[in-house]
Length: 121
Length: 113
Image 1 (cartoon, one colour):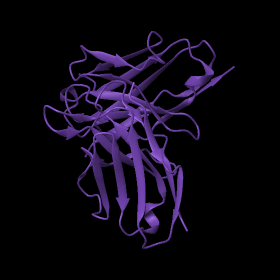
Image 2: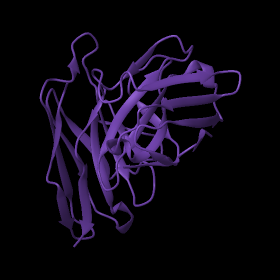
Image 3: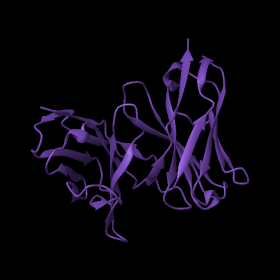
């Protein structure tokens, strides 16, 4: 069974940084792309970023490009999101989501429980 | 970017009745090379992450009750719950995975009448 566990959320100052992690188990981690999807309080879903299984190719939403960096450590079965220059608009629950293929297809077949990031002004 | 819009924003349906949610994209998500619609439906219950219900516009995921069905092609899609059960109370999202950035509809809140 696929299991995804996010961590690293919390309170950050505007302009500050946070690093999120997602520990994966129950599947062959390195053979699937992984993504981050966020949900602002009471709002809808927004895809943030994706990385291919090998980690060599990444993609970002325009709203986070140049501020956020997605990466993965396949030896540790862990996905990361380094978030810099945080703004109040980055306040959200951040979910890691497994893709169905080894490339970033956007077919999110499994999700973690999420970690809350709150950015204060 | 492909904009995905759902209607209605909220819906109240009696138990046992049919619920229908619509989803429209600003450009076709039908990929001509494989004739597949790159459109998914998710269910999100309060306090839980989204759950994938349907892929390729009409293919139910394993374990999803057959009262859930998806239809449509190109730019117009529908999620139908044939006989609403109490456990179907949730927000439903459609999402296109035709192109980056992957985008979601704004959600439809399904309530029990």
